Every structure is written in structure tokens, then in C-alpha cells.
Amino acid sequence: MSKIWHISDTHCNHDQIIVPDNIDIVIHSGDASNYLDPIYNEPEIHKFLMWFAALPIQRKVFVAGNHDTSIERGMIRPEYIEGCGIHYLYNSDVTIEGLKIWGSPYTPTFGDWAFMKNRSKISRVWELIPDDADIVVTHGPPKGILDTTYRRDNITELCGCSALRKRIQDVEPQLMCFGHIHNFKDITNAGTKRVAGLKTIFSNGACSTDRKIGAITSHGNIIELPHENLETKNE
Image (cartoon, rainbow, N blue to C red):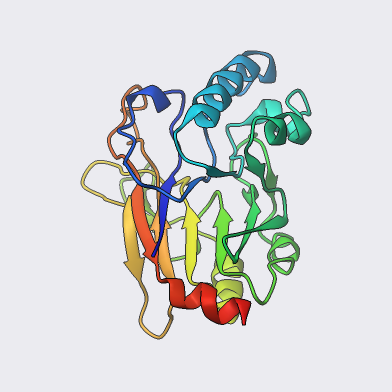
């Protein structure tokens, strides 16, 4: 089995996370930082990258999130992240242990944060997901899957992207990793889920809870993918 540890939305509290043993690949799907202002955001990202790079896990994958503004503004360059021994995915893919992993930081527009596109145009990003992707990593969730929160009027809503869900249904990767939508009040989004009719395992790795951003409230998800998939792919 290939053992994958998925985390997300650590929001500068990465040093509180309990790191599991015997992990083959760690995936972080964005929001390593907090500040909107990229000047203040940059040192937050540097601290996160130093921690992430030092993890006793050989293979590391990172996709930025809407809070990671210093990356969007180019103050921290992809080549710097790659130089830390981290695979940085920006509408791109990498193959690790025979698994094709594709990642994107984009989410539907909400506020004035980083890596956002209008819902009417974001499907152009999802069209870039390869048909043979084994793992898809995005910052935000697909519509209706571990994406529930409360609106200001205290009514629940599903915040995910419907265009992303449609593309995932077409590609049907083994695993989809995301975060962005945290636990909130009595709503639990962190965890894994399967959807009837799809082979994909969906993982919301958000480690934070809304209104409790100063603490880690979840330590991510561990997903095991069988070696048979790798053997078949390499034949």
C-alpha cells in the first residue's frame, strides 16, 4: 500500500500537528498562512515551508490556497518551493510512485483573496485535469462534498464548485484532496467520504475550525492506495 497523509488549512499552526509515522507521500492543499497583505504573508509561508521541508517524509506535494497571497504575488517563487524538496503544483502534475498527481490553487471568487476565478470561468481550469489523473489536489471542494457551512443568516449552504464536481465525475481519480471549507459549529467537513457510483475517495484535510483559527482541531487524513493500482499503471 502507498500511505498518503493529507493536510490542509494549517493557517500558521503547523507546529501543533501530530505527524504520523511511515508515510510515503504528504499532500498539503493550501492555506498554510493567514495574512491577506503579502508583505506580512511572506514570512508566514517561509516558516511553513521550513517545517514542511523538514518533515521525515520523502515525498511532499503542496498546492497553494486563497490565503497564500505572497505566492500569488510572486514574492515566493515556485522554484524556491521546489528547491526546498517540495513538489509545487500550479495547474500541473507530477508522477510519484507511479501515481499521477495534478494540482491547482484556484477556488471560486469569494472576497479579495488569492487564486480565485469567477464561477462562470473556473471550468477552464478544471478542463486541464488530465483524464488519467490518479490524485487531484485542489484548494477548494467540489459541490456537495464535505463543503457545508453556515451563511450569515444561519442557514446552511454548500460552498463547493459544481464545475469541479462535474470534471471529477468524468475523470474519476482514485483520490481527491482539498480543504478550504473548515469545520464550523456543529458541522464536520474534515475527513474522508465516498459518493455512490464513484470510485474516488474524497478527502477534506482542513486542520482548522472556523472561529478557532489559533488551534489545530484536526490532524489530517491518512489514505492508503493499493499497490495493484501502481502495478497495473506500470504494465
